[in-house]
Each structure stands twice: as structure tokens, then as C-alpha cells.
Amino acid sequence: MYPNFLAHIKKLISLNAEEEELLLSGIKTLNVKKKDFLLKEGQVCKANYFVEQGLIRMYFINEKGIEQVTQFALENWWIADYMSLTTQGSSHFYIQAVENSTIIAIEHHKQEKLLEKIPQLERYFRLMMQRAYAAAQMRVKFFHVHTKEENYRHFISMFPQFVQRIPQYMLASYLGLTPEYLSELRKKQP
Image 1 (cartoon, rainbow, N blue to C red):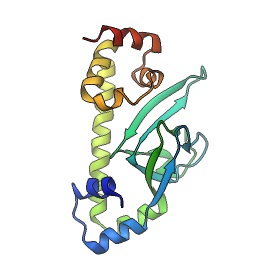
Image 2 (spheres, rainbow, N blue to C red):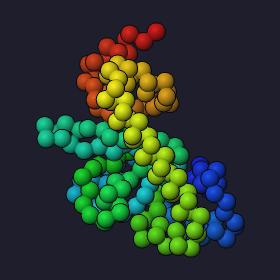
Image 3 (cartoon, rainbow, N blue to C red):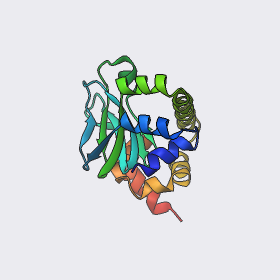
């Protein structure tokens, strides 16, 4: 029913049949079309989103009115505005489908109850947050240490599955490049 979702969780923790059933009773499946929003700036992020199938992006609009992509999530990745989700305050981000997508949503209040009833889920989400935070730290380091071209080369070597699926202007935004410069870099590829 949710092959990616359950397999991803079971890679890190064990669930018995009763716990699995309880977990599945606490989730919601969302089928979102390309360009549909899961969250808009000013709204409260009500759920943690797991990408069962598809591609999602998070972005904000800067003072010049330009979209700045901060994160992508494809199959088996989580995405949420964690500040808004945790505090239940207004979001500063948009979360939008880049492709038609199937999303598993765990609403904030349901996730809290699931964590109480299935203690090993705490471990799962701790591991997910640690990995996400470590990746964010490395991204900051790469932006400070490497040239824009080196960042692009590193990204395409680490995440080749993204390059074919992400529109060029979104990838440029994520990497801090102009679409024109990204086009030049792509032409230089061997």
C-alpha cells in the first residue's frame, strides 16, 4: 500500500504488525498535481511530508521577488517547514509539487501521538533529522569553500537522479546560479 514509506522506516527501526497498523492509521495520502502547493508562506505547516512518489520543492521569495529554492525532496525523502511545524507558527516558505506526486502526510498532532504510542519512531525521526542537518551543514560548507562550478559538479555527481527531473531554472536557484550560467556549465560537460 505504501511500499516506499514502510520500507524506509523499516530500514531503521522494527515495527510489529500492531505498530505498523497504528502508524498507517495516523497518516494521510495526498495526490498532488504538478505546481500544487502543500504549503504557502503565511500558512502554518500542519504536517511532515514523505514523498512516496514524485518530486517536491521548498522555496521562499526574496526581497527582489525572485524564488529561492532551499530544498528538494524526491522519493523516500521528508520535507516540511520544521520551524513552522514545531512552533505551529506562520511559515516563511512555499512547498510545491514539481511533478505529480504521491505524498504521505503525518499531521503534527498525529505525529506527536504516534511518537508516544510507538517509541521507536522517536529514534527514526531523530536519525532523519540528524541526516538532514548534516546534509545542510555540508551544503553550507560547499557554498563557502567551492566555486559555483565546483558546487554544480559536486551536486550532479552526488544526485544524478535530480538533474534530469528538475527544471533548469529551479536547479539554478537551488545552486545560487543564474539559469544562463547553469546552461553554460551544462554545455561544458564532457
